[in-house]
Amino acid sequence: MAASVLSAASYVLADAGVPRALMDTPACPEVGRFDVTVTDGVIAAIGPAGSGERTLPRHDCDGGLVLACFADLHTHLDKGHIWPRRQNPDGTWMGALLAVKADREAHWAAADVARRMDFALRCAYAHGTAAIRTHLDSAPPQHEITWDIFEEARGNWAGRIELQGVALMGPDIVLDKPALRAVAERVKAAGGILGGSSAVHPDNRAIMRNLVEVAGEFGLDLDLHTDETGDPSADALRSFAEAILETGFAGRAVAGHCCALARQDEATARTTIDRVAEAGIAVVSLPMCNMYLQDRDAGGAYTPLWRGVTLVKELKAAGVAVAIASDNTRDPFYAYGDLDGMEVLREGARILHFDHPQNAAWPWARSIGADPAAIAGFAHTGTISVGRPADFILTRARTWTELMARPQADRLVVRAGQAIDTTLPDYRELDDLMGVAIS
Picture 1 (cartoon, rainbow, N blue to C red):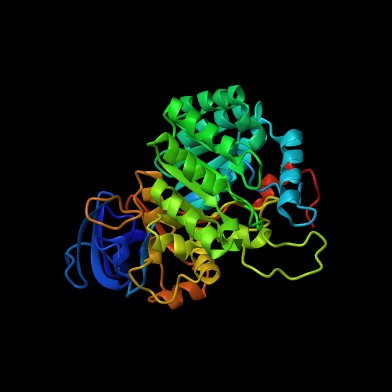
Picture 2: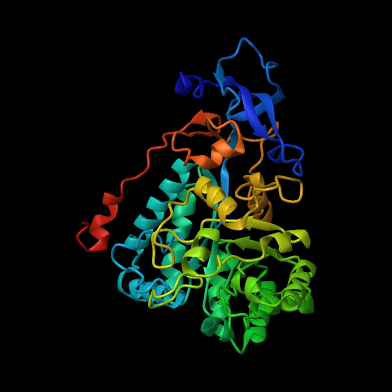
């Protein structure tokens, strides 16, 4: 019955539990009970439960929570699903970096990248994601191959998943301004975003200044990997903020990871947070990947002592826009994951402790949808309001504890008012790319 109702041109989601934070009161943690009328793929009306037009087909949510489709602000679609052929030898960040480098040099021809990227997008779509920003390894000459594939994927997925691409480069490329400009030119042609990565480096001020200046020169937004380390001496995030303030950079700016912030003394962390807020930098935390990699012993002899994540609550309290995201998927940086926003929300609540109390300080229902959508400037807003596309995730969970207690594998995903097939692609599709026996 659900499938037939959710394929009608017009219908009512009756007695739907909608978080007010996803509606017109973003600072409200409460869930309301509503009738949501959908007409021709658009939300036509929202009223109190029982108010919906009785002549229309009705899908009875019975108080089940209805979420907006997810917006995933930080992923790596080009790296995804290489774990079977290129594992992380010791689970460390450096082990991951070297393993990916070896895999890229050996395998990342266009066909390989395209198939893995499409597989990852099909997973995300089935889980209920409507918008993704992906970082793309862009050290020349890989940038030409990967950006061509990304542009093709963006066209193929238009209308299903809105895609943004970010050029990811290490400090060596960023410090070489001609090389940096060559990548920026390709990014500009693709309508992309300029990115880079640094943590503990003696030239962080020059690295960040180069990125900000070249982004300004080409009219590009910035999204950087900063301080993805437990070393408290890392200062890339502060250098990023200072470069923006010194140059007057006017584009959007995002910093991912920022793990070292949680390892620094209070005065140092406070100074950096204040500069980040002043510079208008948004921060995206990657709770699953950061907990997986940070404070890991290469020999496996000791248990990690911290969670690896940044100071999300302190950043939020300072007025910094904060979101959470998936990050890597089944590659040497993170052996698990499936680009499932529900998993990110559930694990984020557990790892970051943003679940209690539920208050206006952080209406965390927005953290994997409306907040990242606003930071990225996606057309998909991650909200539920009249006039917006009817892009929903319907669950049987009536409360936050019911939502978080289970994976919600029985969720219904509605796009443009129509229920979609949520069957996930089979990993066996990629076996021929892996070149190893799966046992």
